[in-house]
Length: 208
Image (cartoon, rainbow, N blue to C red; front, side, top):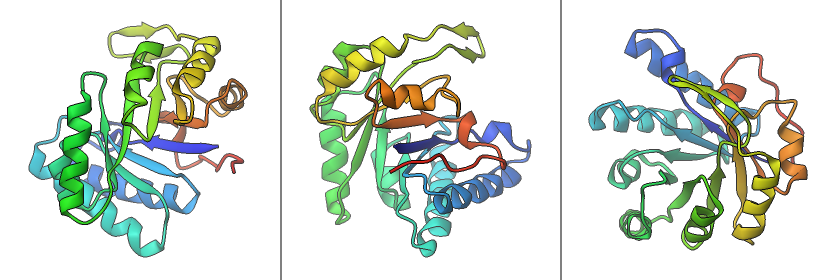
């Protein structure tokens, strides 16, 4: 089971320095517990601060010999400069953005891992042409700032997996320790989440 964690610094202390430190601690903990991907999703940060945060996370994780890939939800230029392994593309992004990101990373002498957000089988079909990972959401009901968002369900997830063919699909949205296995039984290659991986009491799931 592939494990894909997503950051949310707003759940930590209000002070930005303390938040950055908390994210570094979280990243190191997740790297040591076998998480495969960590998406830095802090879209409200100024680009300078986003680059600094990403670079600090890369710097603290790499010496541990971790295989966890650091994915930035942000500009490819910032991700490449910070030493990230790739970028996450939102549902508004196009194939041109993926091509540009790969060209930019190649100038830094390394490949670019691209994950992409999908909310329908149509989006899965189009993004499977250029993404290495597809995050399909929301599978289960989740609570958002503007209210409750209903999940599309496991049947839709299964259809997304079939549409993606050989591209791994990760279930996102309302995923918990209790329903994670249902996602893999529906065909998902793994799970993606914010809350699931956030707490210090999180324990590694059994995965291969």
